[in-house]
Image 1 (cartoon, helix red, strand yellow):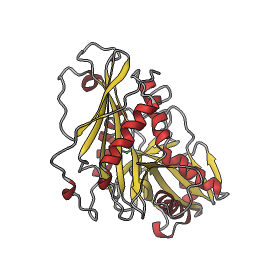
Image 2 (cartoon, helix red, strand yellow; image 1 turned 90 degrees about the vertical axis):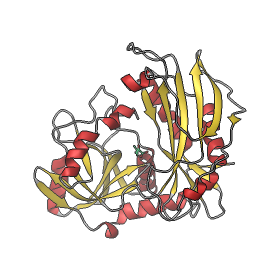
Image 3 (cartoon, protein in one colour; image 1 turned 90 degrees about the horizontal axis):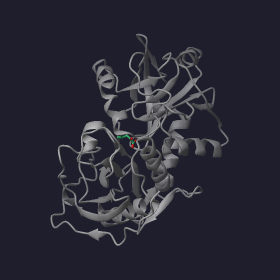
Image 4 (spheres, protein in one colour; image 1 turned 135 degrees about the vertical axis):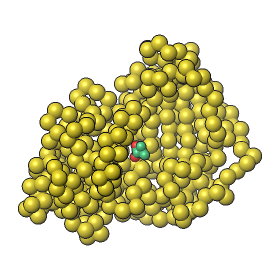
Length: 357
Ligand code: COI
């Protein structure tokens, strides 16, 4: 990896601040963007020209290779404000590691930790008024890297741009989700790119998700590509079940994203001495547990959604209704604990929070 000193970052402040547009009590995910954005360029084998500029449209050649062949990757992370108005990032070094895993798999330039962290902390510090402090809210941060060669031959680009934009976020889902087990389309396969945050993974999921939505479901549960029996992810989230007091989640591998929320939930469950199993789990096992009354909880985990409880699972024409969300012990406890850690209400024993400024 190339190590580059990109500091000091050139800063051009906006003279048209839009913070007045933010209604802290009514935030829609992903719609409103903070005043500034960061970018840096990879050219001649190094990162340079790091800048913070007013948020705004990009000027790019129509031959930009990312637009044609999908050499584009992203991260999702969040910043939180505590009662003293201090701003913290949640596990930013893990996002940095993961963006480089994505970059390597997609034959893209990796990004040095100092470039990633300098851009991130200075941008969030400058736009700290955009970090909401209302219950369950945060600043969603979207770092992404795109191939920028003006070339439509198919080969890895020589040039890349790394951007960071940010957007105040409230709830991703307004209610417990209804999911449909997908047994036709696939999201990921061994040897593929399901374990990285490649933009194309998300684009390819939209058509099957649209079909599920037309049938009244919020999201799909993806199953293994070979037999469509083993459960993998749900929508953009990792999947977890509590059966007979055991927390079960599919194991990491080529087809599953190494979610940072996933890891945080497993860590807290282990802290609480709960039995945790990272292993394959089939739809038959879930249906069986539902019949026996041992399916206590099911939820998705992700940066955007945090903990999204599953209300109903559709499979082969039947809907399996789960216990009422508000009465579930584990998902409610872990969701609250994550909020409390992030807003400084309980000690951060794993050093997940990174102070900005
Ligand atoms: C995240 O949780 O950060 C995601 O990747 C979901 C996002 C695509 C909205």
